[in-house]
Image (tube, rainbow, N blue to C red; front, side):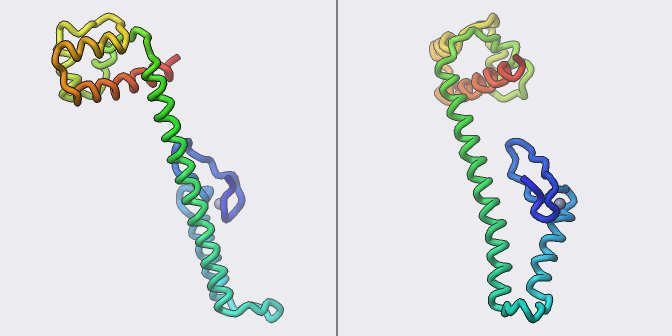
Length: 165
Ligand SMILES: [Zn+2]
């Protein structure tokens, strides 16, 4: 992506909305805005017989174009994150590896369920598979909400371990 104003490369942050201008201080963005405004306000030379209606619609088209670009990039981002969530879901369902849940939970921001799991002396401390943990939680009367949060935690655990390796 090149800056819409000066044409310099715009460094993009993965996962963030596409940046259309090169710098953080919005200098190019402001200049681009002024330029668009100037197009409308400057009296045009004789050999460019563009009337104010045409000029206005030109400026409108420009800002519409910028808006559309932003929208398309937003949608692409949404699709990418949905695809990623789906991949993690599939991964989660296929995961049969024994993982050290308890040690990992100690390092997470505490929620009531995490506190409860850490306080549960029968929860396996050794690496154990997801299916075994789920069976254990069900047998101990953990609620459906607890199991849903467990699934969420397990996905985070898988993702975290994938990032480390
Ligand atoms: Zn620029």
